[in-house]
Image (cartoon, rainbow, N blue to C red; front, side, top):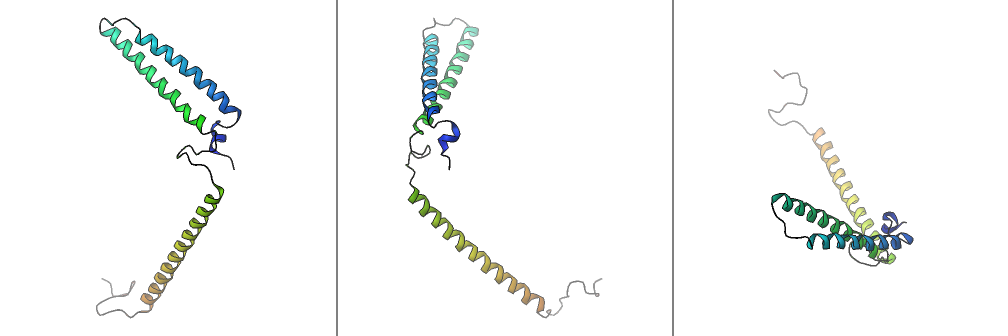
Length: 141
């Protein structure tokens, strides 16, 4: 069974490459951030809008680069979601519990179906009460 990291490219050699890419991208985002922060004071609305767009682009780029980092940590045996180490014994115990719950639910469903079937059979053979007509009777007007 493939680990999540194998499917996303975070396993083995890919993790090293991804780490290298992440480091280079961080450096470029830092350069862009320095350029924007070191820019002279803006004069006018047009320059302010241009600066605001640049800040937005840098912020999105920083978030994208930061999103790569958890994949690097996932290269270890830890789970990305909770940082837990995969334990085959725990997995098997959970599978057994799930199977037991499913079997119990199947039994409940079967018992309810049997009870409903008995109830339907009893209704079909029961005499009609006073004033009740059986479905499809000829008396209907």
